[in-house]
Length: 326
Image 1 (spheres, rainbow, N blue to C red):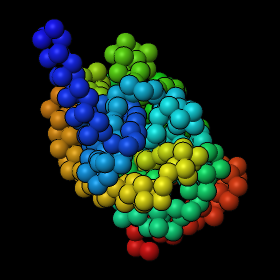
Image 2: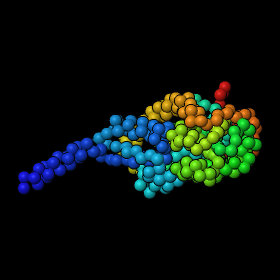
Image 3: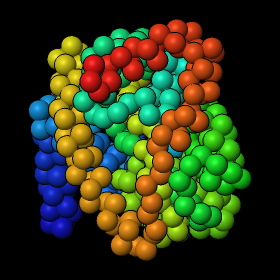
Image 4: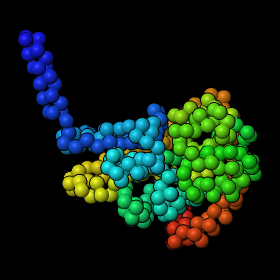
């Protein structure tokens, strides 16, 4: 009986401690980033900010490496209320055409340019998100993308001829690499390493932070520094669920998302320098591509976007007008 009493007392104490430390609301943040990725660092920073500022009201729990689903699954789970936040990037161009503006090659020149675009056009993207049942709590980034493959160094678009290249699930990335002459293959990020290792695909394109954290340098021979697309990432919630939150919690989440963007931009700049060395040290041959040749080959994509997307030309003109030297 004494033993039973001790067990009951211990169980009660644990229960009380848990109840005392538990937040009123637990929110799950799912993402596809691997350990060591910029996605992981960004999501962990956001969670730490929220938990520190609103620990008694909200606890954000993080789940990386596609534990709660791949990008498209996470978008669906947001709507079903099974996940509270996700961090989509390129896949948003499949949610609404407006997000395809960031798929235009070389349209974003640097992070300061991205800040100006955000300041001028955030209503456009927020309205597009709302129309599709989502709310953008804030922006982070995926980064400037470069090409790796096992066939040859890529100096000009013609070097991509016939290369089986994984792309994210976004229609404009697919069109872009078709225009360049590659054989683009949309695929979930979590499947890419095995596909590269087994030769199902020849290459892929991602920022250094995604390449290095996913260890693609172990199964790729060439890295070509193209910087062809800058992709923001979106701290995304369900609009229905976000709208139902008390105003003070909405404000706290938005504040932490803004702080996380500052953190992410600093972290990304650091990683660009350090991770290129990690990739080189793994024995990957690195070359700098002829960006002028890629920019010239990108003109038809801009024209398609202008022709096919409502207000596309105006979006292009606005973003370019906010570029360096504006």
